[in-house]
Length: 433
Ligand SMILES: Cc1cc2nc3c(=O)[nH]c(=O)nc-3n(C[C@H](O)[C@H](O)[C@H](O)COP(=O)(O)OP(=O)(O)OC[C@H]3O[C@@H](n4cnc5c(N)ncnc54)[C@H](O)[C@@H]3O)c2cc1C
Image 1 (cartoon, protein in one colour):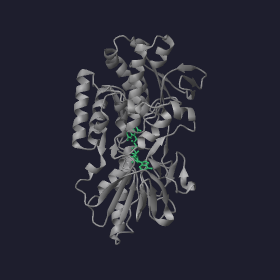
Image 2 (cartoon, protein in one colour; image 1 turned 180 degrees about the vertical axis):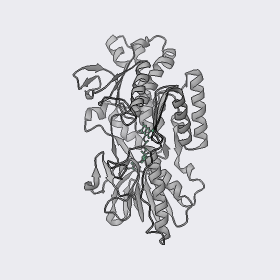
Image 3 (cartoon, rainbow, N blue to C red; image 1 turned 90 degrees about the horizontal axis):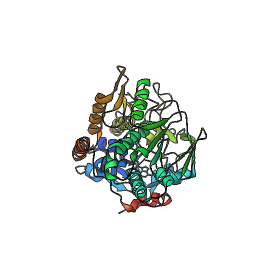
Image 4 (cartoon, rainbow, N blue to C red; image 1 turned 120 degrees about the vertical axis):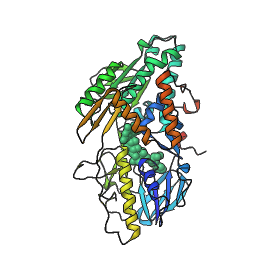
């Protein structure tokens, strides 16, 4: 059976690993990047805490010992279900079973100005672009003789109070406190302002009330201005206009306020629901399709426990992939083809960190909540376990220890190749080397 998997994120990679060296399977794993990205730590790349290579794992290396998994570095441009083939930038590829695990991208909700001026963080490259902007701002502060310009450069607005916004807010506040004053002794960092905008009444919306309150308290303690029940109405590259009519002058808006599924061309639009996700049944099969599945962030599955679909988190993606691998093996065995198992998600908990020593953790069964240092240790341990590859785990661990002791990671490098007008940046991402 030839299984073609589009996307080597948490779902696609886990599926390929689960079918690795399994008799009867010929697997082709396709991604537009030649590495797997560990998205939960993008914010540490953006704030100079980790090197990009620490959280990126080469796909070909993951399958060195594989006899049946092959990799293609290309962007998939469409699906042609009637011909059992996909179209890609390197030609058409046929499949017996197709798995769409393309994840999600930033949703700017159609605001072209945000596309141009705001910084998203949905890929390693975007995390690096943000890092360059944050650092170059201070290089410009040093040489600017306009007070207004300096204030604009020293103001960061983060939009979205979910885990990404909260973790970024905490990390940027720590840069302000520890790292930046040593790099730029001529700058008065009491003038640096960090705003976190959240449209609802709490940060970390999906988490417990205790976690919401604690995360806000931690952020405020670190000097982040948390503004609730307020959304960004507009941004022209210089001035943010808030829904309450107030304005903030800033050179840096970070957009962590929404995602939309990456649905390839050729999927029936009537199957694409809220959040640009593809409707699947309990076996992750796209409704009405015989041999096309969707997994992870791009899939929308209703179950008795999750009647409005699953949360778009790594654990759902990984577990859906494991379940699909088992079902594909049953289909391949034929005698067990009518013994397929439905997917259900068992939430083991959620967590977010807010700078060093501070985190919040919720565990649903039994109903437990941790905050502070202990929660931070749990957060670190679980992230280390999840990162792919022994070398990456070691590098991240050593970096964390070094950072913890010195407050100084020496990763504040500006690679000019990334510093182009944002309209050109998408092209750079897809350049093949
Ligand atoms: C900043 C950030 C922090 C996060 N923190 C957490 C966290 O702490 N805990 C948690 O559980 N979850 C977290 N998440 C969410 C988690 O990363 C996602 O739920 C998870 O990555 C979804 O896995 P996936 O396999 O569906 O998609 P992804 O992991 O996004 O993988 C999709 C893959 O498809 C590839 N692709 C897309 N389109 C194409 C195409 N046309 N052609 C070829 N390849 C393509 C992409 O390059 C990518 O490799 C975070 C996400 C972000 C952005």
